[in-house]
Every structure is written in C-alpha cells, then in structure tokens.
Amino acid sequence: MSQRTARILTGQNVPGTPGVSDGDGDHDPPPVDELLPAQRAGAIGVVVVGSTVAGGYLGDAGQEENLTADQLRTLAAIPPGAGPVDAELGGSLGDYRASARELPDGSVVVVALSLGEVDETVGQLGAIIGGVSVAALLLAVLLGAAVVRLALRPLDRVVATASRVSRLDLAEGAPSMPDRVPEEDADGATEVGRVGEALNQLLGNVESALSARHASEAKLRRFVADASHELRTPLASIRGYSEFVRRDAGDLDPDVQRSLERIDSESQRMTVIVEDLLLLARLDAGPAIAREPVDLALLVADAVSDAYAAGPDHRWELDLEGEEVPVIGDRVRLHQAVANLLANARTHTPPGTTVVTGVVARDGLARVTVVDDGPGIPPELQPRLFERFVRGDDSRARIAGAASGGSTGLGLAIVRAIVQAHGGSVEVASEPGRTAFTIELPLDDPLEPPGAATASRTATPGAAELPADESSGRPDAG
Image (cartoon, rainbow, N blue to C red; front, side, top):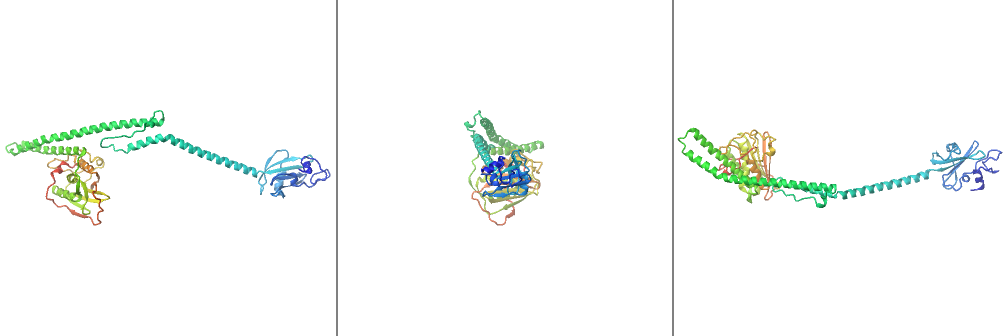
C-alpha cells in the first residue's frame, strides 16, 4: 500500500493529495486502485467528500471501471460504521458485500467486494453435499435391500415349498406331499422359522387327513365291488324264479301276476344298478383298458344307428368331418360311453327332439359332440352332473325304460370314468333349447381334417338293437 493511500484510509491529511480536503476546499477523490490495493477484479471503492461521490471498480485486467449513477447512490447511502451490508448493484455486478467508514476529515470511504464467487462456492459446496447425500442415500438403499433380501431368503424357500404343494393334484388318487420346509428354515427361534415350522405341521396334518380319506374311499370301493359281485348271483336267482313262476301263472290271481311282473322288473333294475356299481368300482381301481386302434368315426356311426333303433321317435343326425378319426383305446368301453350319452338324450328329452352327433379331429384331439334341442339342464345341476346318483328329472322329460324302470343316476358317471381312463375329458354346456356334451380324446395319429364340406345325414336303423351292454350305463340327469 502506498503512503498516500494509507494516510487517506487512516484519516491523515496529506497536503496536495487530490480528493481529500486539507482545509482549503474540496478536491477529487483518489483513484480506485489506490483505495483497493492487491484486490481481485470486481472490487469497488467509493469516496464521498461532501456532496462529491466518486468511485469505480477494478476490471479483469486491473484497470479502473466506472460505476453508474444508481450504483454510486446505492453505495453512498450505506451508513458508515453500520458494519458490512449486502447491496444489490444490478447490471453486470450483481450482489456485493459493502462496508463504509467515516474519516476524521468528514469524508466517507466505501469498500465493496463481489459475492459472486462466494455464491458460486456455496453453490458448488451445496451441489457436492447434495450429490454425496444422494449417493449415500442410494448406497444405503442398495445395502438395505441386499440385507433385507438376504434376510428374506428363508421366507422365499418357504413360499417355494407352499407353491409346489399348491400345484399338487389332491382330488384323486393316493395323496403324497413329500415337500417340506427345510429344517434350517423351520427354526422356531426366528419369525420366518416359526412360519416354516407351522407350514410343515399344516402339511403333515393335511397329508394325514388325505391319507385317511383315501383309505376310507378305497374301503368303500372294495365294499361296493364285493357287494355288487355277491349280489349278482341272488339277483339272477330272483329273476329266474320269477320267470319260472310267471310261465305257469295262468291260474293265479291278476294281482299276483302283477306282483310277479313287478318283482321281475325291479330285479332287472337292481341288476342294472349292481352292474353299474361294479363297473364304476373297477374303473376307479384303475382298470386295464384295452389298447387297440379304434376308428372313432365308425364307432360313433354305429352308436347313432343303434340309438335310432332304440328311439325311433327322436330325430338322429350324424355330422362327420373327414374320413377317419383314429384313437387308441378300448373299443367296447368307448362305444359304451357314446351310447350312454345318446341314451341320455333319448331318455331325458321329449319325442321329436333332434339329436346331432358329431366327430372331428383337430389340434391333436378327437372331439365327439352330442347336441340336442331339448329343454336343457338347470344351471345349478350342471357342475355336479357327472357325479354318481345325480338326476334331473324335473328339468328334462324322462321316459322310463321298460327294463330299468328309469334312470339309475350312474350313466354319466360311467361316461366320465371311461373317458378319463383314456386320458380324455368330458364337458357339458346347456341352456333351454340346446344341450351339448363334448368328449375329447387324444388322437392316435393327429390328423389335419380335410377342408371338405361337413357331411350330414339322418341316421337309418341299424341291423341290431341297442347293445345289451348299454344298459350297464343308464342315462342320468342331462
């Protein structure tokens, strides 16, 4: 700092110094670079002497730059001794921190430094702090997720065990649930361990209950099979004796003759029920289904021909697509399944009903459909239609057969058992005016059916009546 500038800032009068009063009058203020020695660019120096205000700021090269009148007035208005204050100078200067000091001779020196670099530094510091905070937060989230994921691995294994068990088919067959939560995940010392331990106990209880149910069903099947087998002989004896007596019943009272007829009729009906129960018991036990090539189209055509002979008061139509529909299965049992569906339509629909039977091979499956325009099946009955001893006599007019005396409620159950034994499925869809049964079986050699027009014809009477075996699956509700 020069001697002259030092004296100005300390209030010492220097004779002949421009801008400082020596008692003779007002002089011009000193240059800015003398007021702001060794300051960076942008520093401002202002001297107020009486009514004269002069000052400027240092440029980028250290040269003195002039302030505007508004900027000078703003700086001159700063009261001396008030401490550093913020001043908005506008223009290219922006915000400044300024301080004013009154000298002994009455003049006021105002020095101001730019806040731009300070603001920039504060902004950079804030950005750094923000970035570090975000990075730290993200790292904490990732670490937390990793820790939580690691802590939940036992729960994932518990969920995997529960998912595998949920996919088991527990409806039929001997139940087997070998899946259990691993011992290390079933430790009661932790929350997840207690869940795993409880799940293992639940699975054990369910397996025990299913095993007991399966054993009970197996005993019931054996009982039904044994009882049906044992009842065949006494029933045959009853029918034989009733027929023997009826042959010599010319001198008997008419009421006695009627009673004998009823005995014979009911014994025949009982024989049908026993045969049906015995067949179902054998199918439930996993029968040895014959494995031979069967042309399903020809089999269905024969069944429709037999149905025409048994029910000429209905209209029977056959809808075939293609030449052959080959499947592998038991010809006799498959014929029985189709015959039961046709007998079901004949027995539970009024005379004049049209029954259309179709066969098609598509998408690796052989489909047999039996569709009638009868009164339909109530919606509440359809979900359990294929269960045993289910009848829907109120929904579809039932015409009792001469031999059976009506439906046994086992025919559709036999259809489902036969179809499932062949790896297929059977479904029903019904509404007033349309009832459709659909059997799906895997093809022996999947065909792409030709695009020829569907051949429809009205079935004609076959050479034989309905086969006697058809009575072993009496039609039920549907």
